[in-house]
Length: 229
Ligand SMILES: Nc1ncnc2c1ncn2[C@@H]1O[C@H](COP(=O)(O)OP(=O)(O)OP(=O)(O)O)[C@@H](O)[C@H]1O
Image (cartoon, rainbow, N blue to C red; front, side):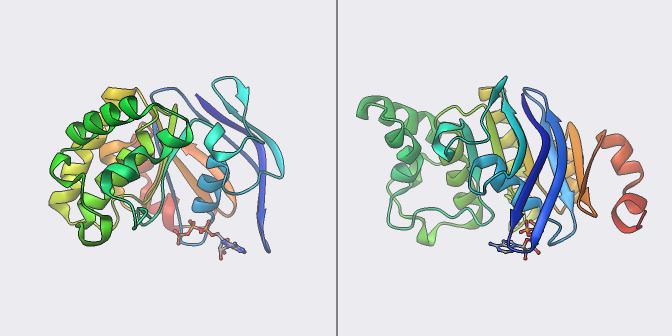
């Protein structure tokens, strides 16, 4: 379970205040909102890449607001995948395991397991440069879940993919959810993704974070997304 209580985040002149949210263990939450509303800012603050100025971020009962990213047990799929270009696919996926001082044998086993789960065994010795968008996203997902995080944060992971690849990624995300019983927060601009994946929807609008049941959100999306209240 991940919970934000009265969270404030500031970067330059941009500020978000008094944000509250709750994502139960195993729940898949989608975060929607207009461009520039602050979705990435929230995700990066949860992952520890931006400081939380006030409030508390609680993960499984523990306040993690001041922990470093690697100490939070949160996996992150950044906006464009952002793979390490000089490393092979296998090295990308074992990166977080090295930081966490896993033995070389355990790392190798885990990379093989991930390669099977994500159907990328044939790619593990390649470097990211010439991988397709879908292949890159698989590797980015593998890197994010390698260390069995309690939570994963995904920043528009499917936005650059064609429809067929996106369908495959939906299936893959389902498989990953089964493997890890993972709690997820996924930024999306796409209603299909919300419909297919979300157990809960957060909308960031006018600097306020509102939570909805997906069915209510989808029925009222026109009003919620486009009208000022
Ligand atoms: N390092 C920074 N310094 C100052 N302002 C920043 C910084 N990073 C982002 N911002 C500003 O914070 C605001 C929110 O940006 P953010 O990327 O979180 O929005 P977003 O909702 O994720 O947008 P998009 O959907 O386009 O990705 C924007 O006005 C942006 O210009």
